[in-house]
Length: 211
Image 1 (cartoon, rainbow, N blue to C red):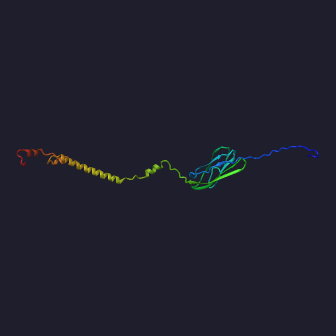
Image 2 (image 1 turned 90 degrees about the vertical axis):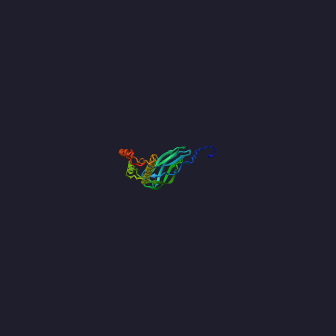
Image 3 (image 1 turned 45 degrees about the vertical axis):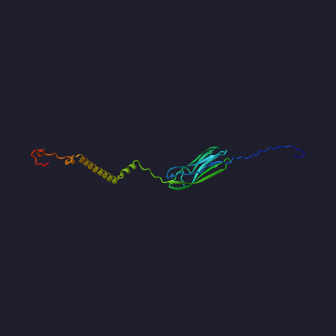
């Protein structure tokens, strides 16, 4: 009613209701860390999977605690829906021992909210042992004095002596068996030849030998 006049009027207004998808960006904690070497780079991988329907924005990774890194913070950009992979952190431990530190991941969801997730890890670090120079092992082998197996050498000499003894004994027995009865000279290797004059004198008719 406008004064005395009744009027019909309409009005339109647009209301915006924000709808956001749930954040399903999943991270897997590193397990069974292999030992690192002091002074050498070590790659720590954190697997991820964006199962949500929205994009993950401004993803970054960082390390906090007793650990030296190639870069304290890494900017990895955006991760689209359905994408999976791994976030690699380059670590460089300086001393041997167990190092405890925190690996953190931060990102923004579709609503523009910042989300953080971190893992507390312990990395075993071994000492850096320099490799031996080429030829070092050969030099050590040359410096070692070879040991003589005296026990085996003595046993071998005893066996050889016994074999020689039995061989000489069997040879003498064989000669004694082949020799004629009463032929004593057959037992020797080189019997001396008899004197022909003496033989003729003994075998002659004037011999004094008694048969």
